Image 1 (spheres, rainbow, N blue to C red):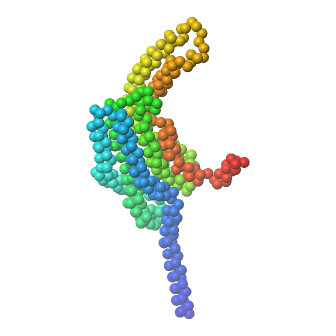
Image 2: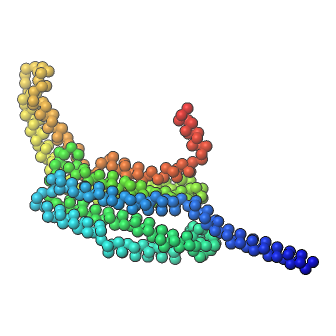
Image 3: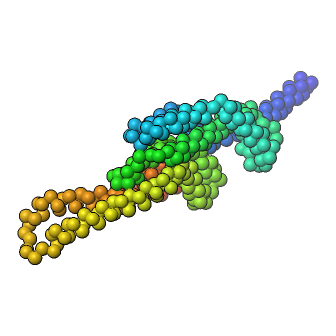
Amino acid sequence: MVLAACACAAGRCASQRSTNEERDLAPWGENVKAVLCDFAAYAYFLIAAPLLILIEPLCISRLGAIARYFFAAGLVPDSDRARFDVAVTSTRRLRDSVLVEIALVILTYGVIVGLIHHVPSEEIPGWYKSGGSGSSTFSVAGWWHALVSLPLLLILFSGWLWRLSPWGRFLWRMSRLDLRLIAAHPDHAAGLQFVGFSLRAFSLLGFAFGTIMAGMVANRVVHEGVPLTTYTHLILALVVCVVILFSGPLLVFTATLFQEKVRGTLAYGALATSQGLQFERKWLKRSESLDESVLEVSDFSATTDLYQVVSNVYAMGVIPLDLRNLLLLILSTLLPFVPVLLMALPFDVILQELAGLLL
C-alpha cells in the first residue's frame, strides 16, 4: 500500500511538472508562431534592409554620372569650372562624412530608447516579451530586435534621407552657375532633362520605402482583418512624400528655366515673326496662281524647320522632370502593396476573376 501510494504521488508530481513545463513553454510556442507570421519583420529585414545596402553603389553611380554630365555636355562654362569642381568635391565629402554617420547612430538609439519607454505595452508585438503578450519583460528576440535589427534599419533609412541633402545641395549649386542653356533644346528643358533621370536611380529606394509600409499594413490586414481600403490615404500619403522627397531637389532649376524660357520666347518668337512676315510677303501676296511645285522651294522647308524649333521653345517646361521617370518612381513605390492586395482578397474571388478573364 505504501509503495502504491508513493507511486501514485510520484505520478501526480510528474504529471504536475509536465503540465507546468507545457504551460511555461506555451508562450515560447506562441512567440515563435508570432515571429514566423510577422509580415513586417520579413519586409524590414529580408527585403528592405538588404535592398537599402545593395542599391547604394548603383544609385551613387547613376547620380555621379548625372553630376559629371553637367561638364561633359558643355553646360558649365570655363569660367565656372573651378566652382563646379568645388561643388563636386564638397558633395563627396558631405556624403562620406564619418561625423554624420556617428550622429545618425546616436540619434537612432535615442529614438529606440524613447520608443521603449513611451510606446504602450499593448502596442508591442507579443513575441517581444518572454512571457507572452501579458508580460513586461523583453525576450531575447525582443532585445535583439530593439537593439540590433530595428536600429540597423533606421540607420540605413536615415542614412539615405541624409544622402538626399548633399544631392540637393549639389543641384542648387549647379543652378547658381551661368549654365549654357538652350531654350530650343528638344528635351523641352533647355538641355537639363537629364537631371530628371535621378528619379530612375531613386526608384529602387522608393520600392524599399514602400516595402516597409506594406509590411506594417499586411500585419493589420491579415492578422486583424482590417480592410485594405482603410489604409488608402496612408498609401497615397507615402506616394506623395516619395515624389516630393526625390523630385523636390529638381525645383532648384525652376527659376533658371523660367528665365531661359522668357528669353527664348522673346528671341525665337521675334525670329519666327520676321521669317513669317518675309514668307507671306513673298508668297501670299502674289497675284499669279501657284502650282504644287512651289512646295518644293527651300523657303517652305526653312520656314517649317524654324517653326519646329520655335515650338520647342514654347513647349519648354520649368522643371526638368519627365513624366515617364515620375511614373516609374510611383509604380516602384506601389509595387510592394500588390502582395498585400492579393492576401486581402479571398482566394475564391481571385479564381472567379481569373476565370472571367479567361472565359
